[in-house]
Image 1 (cartoon, helix red, strand yellow):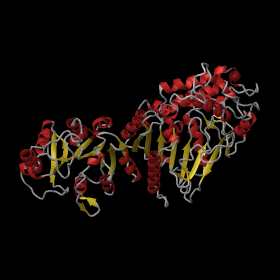
Image 2 (cartoon, chains in turn red, purple):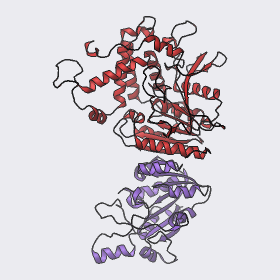
Image 3 (cartoon, chains in turn purple, green):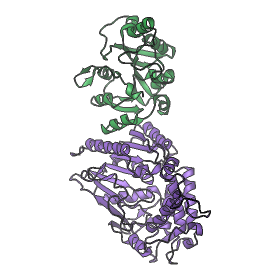
Image 4 (cartoon, chains in turn orange, purple):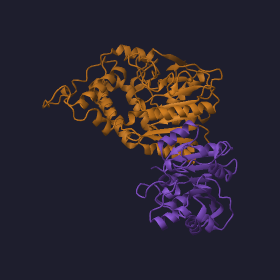
Length: 399
Length: 219
């Protein structure tokens, strides 16, 4: 595997990650056997736990709570130092005092999804029946399962209606599921760079990632912890493939072009001669430090299964019939993973349901990842939308 | 020049205002029955939609420019970024009581199709457009030998977004041809104020800088 020699073995100890899965550096809501999570696959998951972070203060009438739904490889650490990587929160461009998701105005909640590996119950968590990690014994979960778990957390926090549910990519799918399943509990919704169903192309990319993981001999049929290993090469390849889909041709060209990495001439080998190769390898190897391979299998599967219309007689508009939620749908011009056409299909369905929907397509060459980056036009509309929702709900400081 | 920028009146003349609102917007708003649902196609920065919502009218908007959409969203309006030529087809039949197309018809690629869509989506349509039969226009073509340019339509022929100019008379003929019923018609002057005359069509066609029409489906 010389071509992948620069994908180093994880620098972070597997024990640290395993510890984080059961005992996260977060707030934890525990649900006992009397409160099972009823999964779409028919299993009642119990006991289970949800790891979450909150920022800002909940106001007296509990009307300023905003739930952030994280993307496939995200977690609850939106606006604080990551406990494993030590890096800043993944959305600190968007969340904070004076930022669109203003922590001085709103009470912001973000929970690790069910099936994740940062403290909410998932395949990396310890199975109480065996004392070992769940691995592939963990039941298959869906986007609606994730949202059902979040609703139980929101109940636990004593919040009836969220001022807004916000998220991009897989997070956007959760936003849409929230509005379809709990329309009365979502005052406003900001689904970003997402779709109401996962496309064939997207399923194909996920399958590529899963096969890379499962082809790694260190995967051991998902029981790598028992073998003291982790399929870091397979997971890194999955991440590399995924990462390409988050960017765009133009962004890659602008960032790397055909420039060489620390050399002037090709080495006539399979070494990472090009900067873009070096960058991808870095993305792969840093990802495996913080992410569980089985979790990646489960979460990509959840996205693949997502199809709101399928749950409503194949008529998308039925999912949103009579909904009072205010929507702001946002897409990015260079996003080919969740292209604008997907967002438009959503907007058409919302229009057909007479929903109160706004839609903007933000011009950027930065691809799907644009929602995580510093894109002022996007911040601008997010801020305006949330402030107007706050005003409509009677928040005093709603701008 | 985008359609959004050409919302009435064009740069050069400040629209007449009656108190807080533009006079032409008030005229349009007065054609809409309270409690109804309205789609404003080419809603700009949402001034008319705000006026409608203040009157208990449920408004939605379509706007071409992303900047316009952002401004509308910040005002709490529901506005979708889109184009009258390509996006009206995606709205279901009878979705609105009124569909408003203000100063945009002449900039569409297929005015007839757009007009038909307006009255498919809405039970009524309110359409306004600059009148190419306005005396100043006629004079410039007749005497000056140039494509007309006015205070409200300052673009040259080669960079104008207005590709399908018509006169009030032409529009009336189109409505007849596609069985659209004209319920109300008003001519406005350069400042968007109603021409205070109740005169034959040819007078309006000569002295109205723009026409505003309340339309419904013919029998």
